[in-house]
Length: 369
Image 1 (tube, rainbow, N blue to C red):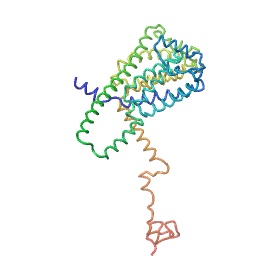
Image 2: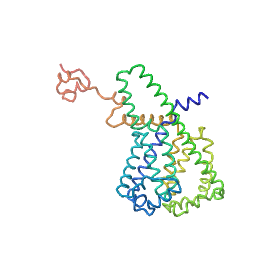
Image 3: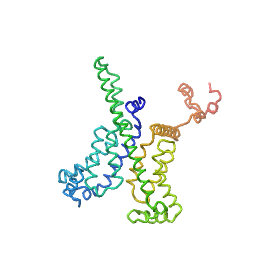
Image 4: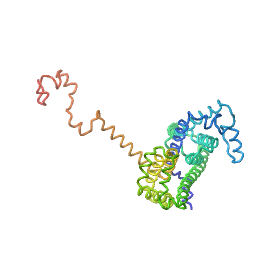
């Protein structure tokens, strides 16, 4: 019991995974808002067929709310849209993450509720993740906040120490705050992991109930839906591979059902790349890149911190090797083959240098008197 309490209150886990979720979803929503910028008025603005009045009528029934319907003016909408873009960018960079994460959740919920009939699974997942990330310490790694804390800690260590009484009170308050923040962070990460497991498990069990997934023809019908065929020729080419279609259908159901059960084993390192391939296939063949990207980012929660640190060390080592291997840089083996350069005193004795007319000095024989 004590070890469990210590793990929940004193050891913040999966900090790099939380940072990956923050960067991934901040970037996705930033790109999403930029992509829909030419169509913002038709989707969320005053010119939308789903008017603010209709949205407010629906809010009475559903309990939703949106900052976009507080004022009907165009200037107000354009200001909200610009603030949404800036908030997504700041959330991705990790600037004042505690406050910006709440603002990001409000932005995502407001845009989601404004035109709720135009959303899909990717929007729903990003909405849930934006709410859960408010509970996590997602700004501890790979963020501007982490850089600012490092600078402040170095400056504080160089300052004068505080009196003993004040230092004791600060230490107790800091310890209490740290335990509370760690507990909330760990609970938030557990909720995120449980949400993804529930999503995969429910999707797999729902597929098992249908006859199309049981006889291996579900993907055949999915590839022949005109609404989800961005490249009909590619869909037809894949559809001709009947054995591949059947195996992919059974494997999809098996992955989704087995993933929550094999989450705490080493097999997850095999399942995660397979899920990545599945989502990439959905993005390309069915034209759902936003949903697939949201799921790929969500899968990052199951990778431990040692995975991210190992990848970072590998990239730094690889970058160092590439820098050492540049054409202008000489390796130790190459530098030993280069001829030694003459000293300034030798150059003064022989102004012509080693490339002059005295061939004996150039070939290593004794210099002229």
